[in-house]
Amino acid sequence: MPWIQLRIVTDGPHADALSDQLMEEGSVSITFEDEKDTPIYEPKLGETPLWNSTIVIALFEAEHDLAPVVERLKLLPYLGESINYKIEQVEDKDWVREWMDSFHPIQFGERLWICPSWRDIPNPEAVNVILDPGLAFGTGTHPTTALCLEWLDSLDLSDKEVIDFGCGSGILAIAAIKLGAKKVTGVDIDYQAIDASKANAERNGVADQLALYLPENQPQHLQADILVANILAGPLKELAPLIAEKVKTGGQLALSGLLHEQAQEVAEFYSQWFEMEPVSHKEDWSRLNGVRK
Ligand SMILES: C[S@@+](CC[C@H](N)C(=O)[O-])C[C@H]1O[C@@H](n2cnc3c(N)ncnc32)[C@H](O)[C@@H]1O
Image (cartoon, rainbow, N blue to C red; front, side, top):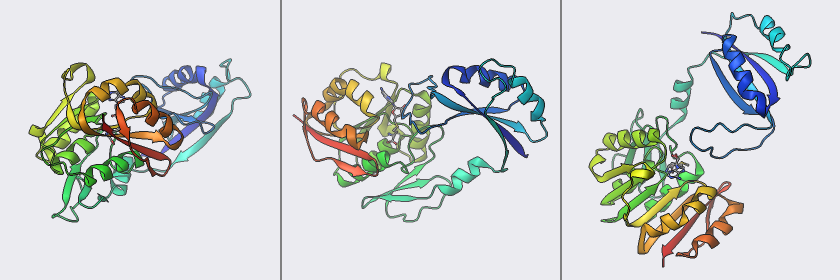
């Protein structure tokens, strides 16, 4: 079906009201875009943070007459006659198909491959993780995930217990099991991540080695030989005491999801509990490693 979209610039506080108005006008979906370039790295669950200058994009069926819609929007006091808008044709694409076509098997380190579940496995002899991320984060294409996968591949995980804090699609947890870990615990605040991790563990035949928890349900005195957490600098600092107590003395830590400029500060903070090692980098992102004192 062909589509058109109406793009309107407004200020952050009015974006929600404008979105409601556009839905009433018959829009089938609304998205928000930053008019400038101010990244928001990870909103809290249930929050939709908005930029000061937000573009509200409303999708309509192509035959929808947008001229009277724009006239009605001009009556809104926060838009008025000087409304800043644009009407665009939208190319008719199957977006899910498009994304699936762009995701190919990728190798990490020496042994490990992440293979989308709808593709052939290029090397059946390798350690292959078959993945469908569903609605969760974690395909391996993001540098923060890649940094963790390369690190896991470099370790001897035989008989080790691992915690994956912020497990998303389960990509790191399942990679750890396939690389030899005896048991992995995945924790995530998002139930969609728990669902995706469970489905991926079943897809890989390792569900009995992966325990999954929302943070409030996680076992209190759980400790592991290895903990990997790809979250973000803010939560990693907040969670530091909890993360530290989950790693056995002599155990290994990897923290990812940090921008270069944040790495030093987070490393200093974690040095209360860990002997920190040199930082690893990929594109704008850094990974910290440490050994529990
Ligand atoms: C960047 S994704 C990483 C997913 C996957 N581990 C990977 O490396 O691709 C971060 C994940 O951490 C989860 N998360 C964020 N804050 C958290 C917290 N305080 N406790 C547990 N999980 C959290 C998010 O829901 C998300 O699934």
